[in-house]
Length: 273
Image (cartoon, rainbow, N blue to C red; front, side, top):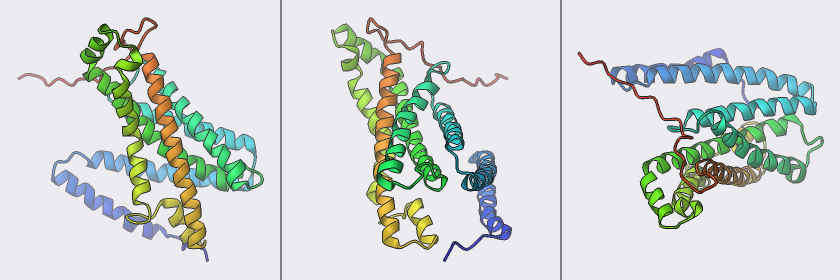
């Protein structure tokens, strides 16, 4: 038994809920209607596009296609990581650190899962590789973005404390140690919360999809447990790599704090009347 197809009318009914919510947002002056509309349009366009791409990939299985779409996913995730930060690194440094952290954490673990744990032949079969990599990148992206944002923001706020520690003879690693730990914890918190409530508060997406697709509930549970462990590992490793990457950029060879590598947020000035 497969999943019941949804008609355009079904999707329109779901979309009408957002229309009502947008109207309430406008009435309450929350300022969310525009962002919500843009997000809904992006979701629709992006998912329809990836649906067509996956349909082509499923009928033309080739490792080159898999590499190309994986790089597109990684590039987009890196951009989103930088876009969500309040004080990102200048230039492409933030994108390189975020993308590099996600590459080493998610691609390595995805490859491990496909070749060792799942062991489906060929290992780059799109039905397994794309959803798995997508989930890993999505979780790692949130963790890396939170960690990097917490790291740069806290360093900016506590610059005098850090410099005082350096003057007292602490190394850069020691002076920023607690901030680094807080940043990594911030990145790990969402996935830890998800793991703690899985099965009690919510049914994770992959498990729900497998059950709707007709799979045995226990088979779906086994896959979801594996996925949750992989997501936690990918998020943790990615957050650690990203935080240490930022730390190296914020201190020079003489262990001096460099705030000039940060891009400050744009300030909006109101005109005086």
